[in-house]
Amino acid sequence: MGRGWHGRGRGWQQTEVPPADDAAGWFEGRLPDGWFTGAPEVTVDREEILIVGELPPLTGEQADDAARAAAEAGRISRFREETRDERIEIARQAEHRYQRKVAWGARLGGTEELFTTLAAPVMTRLRQPERLVLDTLVDAGVARSRSDALAWAVRLVGQHADNWLGELREAMSKVDDLRTKGPDLG
Image (cartoon, rainbow, N blue to C red):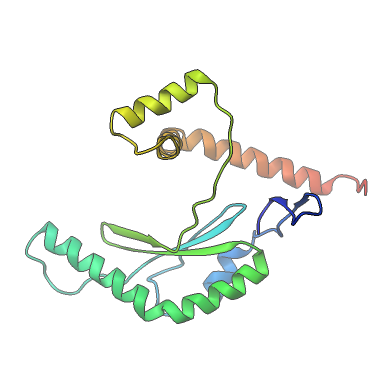
């Protein structure tokens, strides 16, 4: 579901998804004790809710960084397999409640793995100068396609503009708060 245009041959309609302001609390209360060392990181957008939790630390000693990374990846893989059925049930409940897909991930030491994440198509119109930037990234081997190049560029902007994007999101939430306090025109 999600915000967007939906329809089946009878015209198009825009649908609003319910708010997910309480999603972090809902997941913290719904997840089994012992899955993660603390409250999971819950990220929400219009299409997806991503839950990433920190797994308990490894207890054994590893010979080197490669062995540690392999052990971390193995522990994450074990968590994924052992919790699959329960994660599916929790996701089903959350998808009904929030009308968004639910994705999962786990972090351990320096290793993070996301599983069952959504890749949402985004349509955009680019003029030639922007297409040339994407084509340069493809030609240089940085990306396999224009789509990958655009995703790479968005990640790069996100990394370098975190503070600015945080301030923008905060300002938008203040606007939303003011909007809800305003008169009902409906």
